[in-house]
Length: 327
Image (cartoon, rainbow, N blue to C red; front, side, top):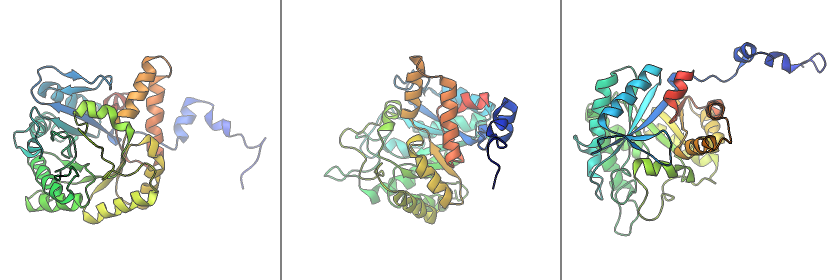
């Protein structure tokens, strides 16, 4: 039993910055942060993303510079997304050895070497002309098992281009197992998998679809991404299945509206847990700050600390380099 007021005065430990720093229960480190980057084929200048101020679609040169800057700031990882010049129904550019993402991976690995973890998003939505995450049936549904074949091929192409980790984000049943088997068979048994295990059909993804040019041309992704109203048990089931199939780390996406899910997953597993601070979270703070309504730096740090406090070991955030420098 602790003392009570007036003997007990919790404010004693808050009265100076150094005291608050010493007893802080949650700490961010640059190595906790992963920076998403977009590589677009066929452009000669970086293209700003209007709905995500400060984020661009990169040229090969600007991508290398962004990777260098992140590594120099101590950021833990990069995750690359590719936007091809030509798209088709099966996302052929996704596993093309000379496709935009594989070129980007080779460029970035050559630029930063082993100073930062270079990851690849393993999905098809940026590469398909219909904007969905897989192969479609004649009726327009995503064919789960045919899509797994494509994911397996894409993951191998990414590993051969130098990806040090692959991150399947399509929420297909069995995707981790299919990718693990393909990587092992191709001699890439040491490449880990970060599984987007609890990915929700969220309205917070809107600006990302501008950046990655992957908005569905019809329908939505509610048949494979989780329902935002779903119970924690559904997320945990997905996490357990991914771990059983060989996932090395798991992810919750989005982050701030799903802190309870992050905490629930963290309590359940003994592997690293990542959370993706998604484009809508980023855009809301940037827009409010641009209008002078909030203190931008404090809002950024508070949002990241909340995600970390909920249990995330790793945080994907578009502010990764900026925050790493500040830390």
